[in-house]
Amino acid sequence: MSVPNESSTANVSRSIWAACLPAALVGLASLLLWEAAVRYWQLPRILLPSPVEVARAAWDERDALWRGSLITGAAALFGLLLAVFAGTLVAILFSQSRWLRTAFYPYVIFLQTVPIVAIAPLLITWSGYRFRTVILVVAIISLFPIVSNVTAGLMSIDRNLLDLHRLYGAGRWQVLRGLRIPTAIGYLVLGLRISGGLAVIGAIVGEFFVGNGTSYDGLGTLMTGWQARQRTDALMAAVGASTILGVAMFALINGLSGRWLRRWIPATH
Amino acid sequence: MCEPTPPTDTGVSLQDACVRFAEGSIGLRGVNLEVAAGEIVSLIGPSGCGKSTLLRVIAGLQPLNVGSVAFHPQPLVPGQLGFVFQDPALIPWRTALANVRLPLELLGRQSPEDATARSSSVLTEVGLAAADHKKYPAQLSGGMRMRVSIARALVSDPSVLLMDEPFAALDDLLRGRLLELLQALWQRRRRTILFVTHNIAEALLLSQRVLVMNAGGVQGELSLPWPYPRRAELRGSVEFGEVYTQVSRHLAEAGNERPE
Image (cartoon, rainbow over all chains, first blue to last red; front, side, top):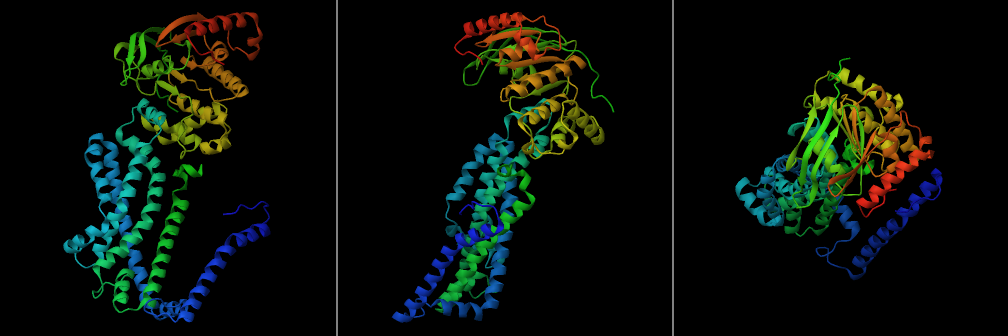
């Protein structure tokens, strides 16, 4: 990002243009080049449709894409909420007992090293071809950043402040509520930024395994269906929709944390 | 407004206090110390000589391996001992007022309204304007943060006040003002004060007695007869210079580091 030297609004808007214009030009040029290449070499549409064809497919399938985005977005959001709830609870338990930490933390790390695609079929077996299963996949894939960040936050309280609480006879609960949890909120937001991206990935991977032909139709199931029917143009439109979903998730987390959690995030002080 | 605890004068005594840290290093090696009720004592010495450990032992934050700490005439209850840390150690998401109120909230002996009123009056007493009571620590200057930190230590009206290099990070002008504030507060209410410092002039301006510490023990002791309030001009006097030299000599014998 370029930093404006002068402070007048005209200069600021000019510098925003200056920052965005090169990227926009590169994007436009790539699209034109892509369109030209498809037309010049007459590439088969199944292999590579042109941008115009992708846009047309997106328009034709707008209802399915919109519905799929909502379902996948909902799965990602619910799964993320589940991960935040479960992860925070686990982190609080870890912060209260060294024994629990040393006994269970290795398994949390172990959970992280298991590739999620490897357990997704198992989850399908246990939980069925349904929305619930996708939420579980999302929750598991986005759990680790929450647990590790919140545990770190709960443990990294200021030593003097802890002494101060002890000096006035504060109990475990008072330290947790008054000191540990507020300190951990900034760390939770950091974890959420990582987990938010993982959640969308988890939702789409989960939907791949749920697969097409069920009553469930998120972006991932649409993709497997269109891939099977060799509708590459619609498939690429779905890739675009999932990208937008990822960006929306990131913006949502940043927006919420900026609005409600600001005073607990040390970086803003 | 109810007073949290009846003001009693409290003396402190340490008998053969020994601290050995988990990693094997020695914190205190057999310190014997008597501090009379209402006395101001400074502890001075090179880094790592055990000054801070001594304060933490008295505060009950550091257990003793051998020896004992006692308060007389009677043991302290929470709230009768205030602690000021080297950095202000304020909670960033609480306002100045809410930071000062924290000890009263933890003690839970007063109604929220009384606690707020008491906190506000102590903040005013240490020189924080009413407009600044609602500000967050990040919005306050270093000097104001230290004032808030002092107010927090005083809010429960302790009879013993422990201060661990509270002014080390402040400039000379600010340090002078806060030393005057501390003397004024002490003249109004004679708490027992133990003040750890690196700064000889600070120790001489503030305290009735200076203890020079080295390698976990008390190496020397000097009594300072000057009346209060002691103004900065005292630093120019001949007797101040003489005592200053004496303390410097003690410190030079104590070790490696020359303070200031």
